[in-house]
Image (cartoon, rainbow, N blue to C red):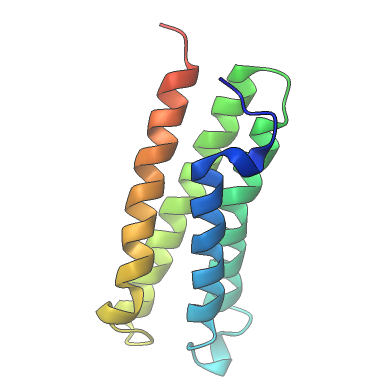
Length: 120
């Protein structure tokens, strides 16, 4: 089940695309958020494909599943941060809707991949 190269995993590719989008969005945030919310959002976004890659490189499926779970946690953290940006009027719904849709899709993909790796 494990791909020989993480770049072959569709979920990793989509997580990388999301990361690029988040880097674009944080440029729209106020300067005073440069070391606060902006930094946290970048770290959360980077954590998603990074944990997928680290898990894929581990020796066991159990470890891979654990890192996919960590990636899902970072994904949900990022979703919360985007909602905070909306609530404090740093970004409007139209600016974050694409990222939130990607988050939903990646969440489903991570869940499906995890379930496919867990023996029944």
